[in-house]
Length: 193
Image 1 (spheres, one colour):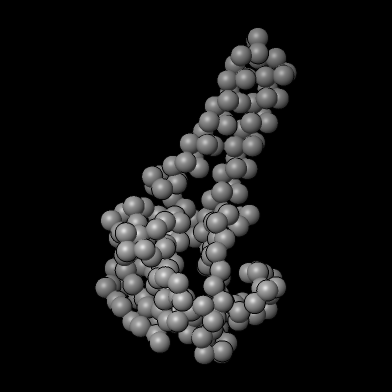
Image 2 (spheres, rainbow, N blue to C red):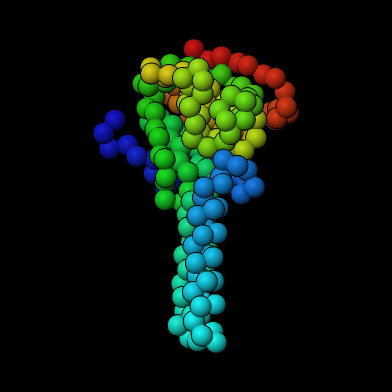
């Protein structure tokens, strides 16, 4: 629908999950290299000004602060399900935001996956089979079947995400009780049609 846009303050939110990205993973390398370059440039400016003058300290502070802000705004992964559909995004500013309405989703299943083998790492990726993935860490997810392609959404709590998707597709609210926990290493495939 036209005005729907993943509003975190909306009372119709059925499920929200925030995941931290692992800075040591190669999929996050471009972000952290960028932060390192910005911080190094600030340090270089500090060192180049003779005897650490005030201009050097100011340059160092500005670029270090920018590097830290860049790191903060570029990190993390959020999954949200509300009464209109599913939305995923990276970072605090919604980088790579993607959304699917209830009508886009034909079904889903809980899956385990190997991010390196199937998608060449975590993040927003395309699989060899044409599927798209949105992940931050781990090996558990929910595979959406949409009208266009399969979409893997990584999660640390696949049962709760599946419960929210079920409620979305059936037009119901999710109860505020914890769902039965599942081992993240279990090989589970369940289909909802």
